[in-house]
Length: 289
View 1 (cartoon, rainbow, N blue to C red):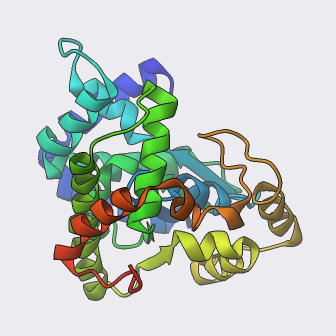
View 2: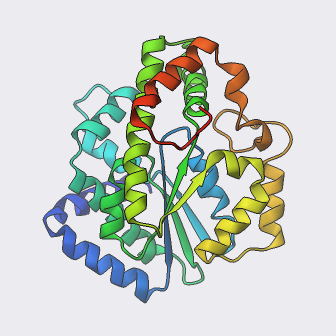
């Protein structure tokens, strides 16, 4: 969305917030009437959500929307605040009400379906900052497909450390901070695991399984989601998951080296901090850890 469109969308979202249940109802009708498949990709940051979203939208009749809620939330953040990436994320996660987040995602889906070309069949949306409202979003958009990706806490922590080094030049963080990151992982995944048990139609996928055999695993996902699969999609996934890495924020990777990279990158003390942070939540998602 360009700036004027962002402002119009944000204004509409605020103006219709009190009518959010009606808008959600109308959105479900529009999705059904226009015969579009809406796929919502959820996951914690640095868990493979970009790879998942982009690879699921490789078909010629699919559209991918990468974190469309971020610019709208920047409108809500306001011009008077001192903007840093950390300040922004703290604001979104702590200060933006649940109902506004859900309504924003509903409206994003509505706008996308209304604007989508006739030939398009699937709209893949990755709202990275709304993972904590996955349950409420599923209730509002009952005819949307929900896919959640989970990554090993040590793998995610190692990726966050590389992100800090890449973006801010921070070479290392304290063991206490690493433990806090892992507590967030445990808390979030325990909550979503319980929600998934109540919503068995959601698809729960593991980063390690997807990167271990990308073509096979994505073919399974395409079939589960009712998306058309063909050899050109398989070739594109194969090309993007082999060879040289394309850079930190690029999905071009030798994917088979990604799952266990943390074993050689983190120290024994760092791994123990990650384990200590996740242990109280007893998610049982990675039994050997």
